[in-house]
Amino acid sequence: MPTLEQIKFAATNLQDRIRRTELIHSLYYSNSLGVPLYFKCENLQHTGSFKIRGAYHFLSQQPTQQLATGVITASAGNHAQGLAYAARLHDCPCKVVMPEGTPLAKELATLDYGADVEIKGANFDEAVDYAKQIAEETKLLYVPAFDHELIIAGQGSLGLELLEDLPELETLIVPIGGGGLIAGVATAVCETKPSVRVIGVEAASVASAQLARRKGHPIKVPTRCHSLADGIAVKQVGELTFPIMERYIDEIIAVEEEAIAMAIVSLMERGKLVVEGAGAVGLAAMLFGHKAIHKGTTVCLLSGGNLDVQTMSRVVERGMLAEGRYLKLRLEMIDMPGALAQLTKILSQLGANIFQVSHDRHKSSLPLGEAEVILELETRGPGHIQEILLMLEEEGYRPEVMR
Image (cartoon, rainbow, N blue to C red; front, top):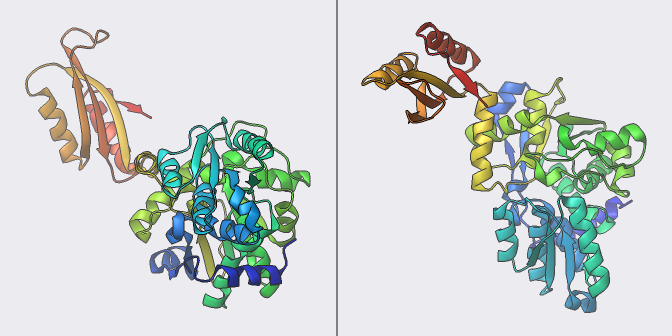
């Protein structure tokens, strides 16, 4: 296991190479949750996530001859960008294998940092297997995304910053993917201040840390994995990170996709912060979890902000839908002049804002003399939605809610 001294060495090594990210006190969330809440904003880090810490520290400890040959890794995006940027700082060739379905924005960003990118594998694990095969064939150095003591030590530098900036820290909430981030940060924090509670949060659809804790060892999640929190959608926690997590983590929480989406939207609106799904799971657990995990002075680690525009659009829609602030309807009405105007008048009286309307009179399945209308509405909550549906039914429209 990486020691506190190794993490301190990594922190010194990273000075002037990374951004010492801001620790922001949130008055809104502090009042809402009833505890002093701070955000550690690694979404503002170089390359948009904490991954540059471990990647740079790992490369800095490699022989010059090996760096000249080059490095390779597998990543869904954040580790790829962090390693590509670190490799450029070391003047080192870098190849990245990214799984199919990787957001285009993350692929393009990795290319911009100078890496050679190949798309291969249906998921992260398949991309890892392929990258390791290439590493063996070409003598490139494989750089793990999380399961290496140098990587863990680099990520742990974040924990030292937290305690320097907020000595009164009592609860720390950290996302879990493979475990490199939480293992490093928890080691740094708990070895310095053992009283701090460390809470790990993962996506319920890829709850590999909870599974490992139940089984007593790392084990692959048996189901097919997909999550808005793609940065932590790892099917198995690390062999090295797991015992560290078991030693320091007080509790592991899993959050559902709707909660993650709502947390992303909430951070945009209330926190004025763009945070990707993996970075938003901690706030999701606090806002929409089944119990209060925040006690005393709390820090929520926002691990990354690489949210591409297309994903952002889908997430905002999903988050608004989950909060009852978005409604998509299909209904049929008489095809005659003024009919659509009458419908929009009803919606206006109810205070529903129309995002989009589609009117189709040519659909073959429609009865003669009728038209299909699909509406996308901005609403004020579940109660408002029920009011809209009830009024439309009373007016004879037979609305059908679309998901």
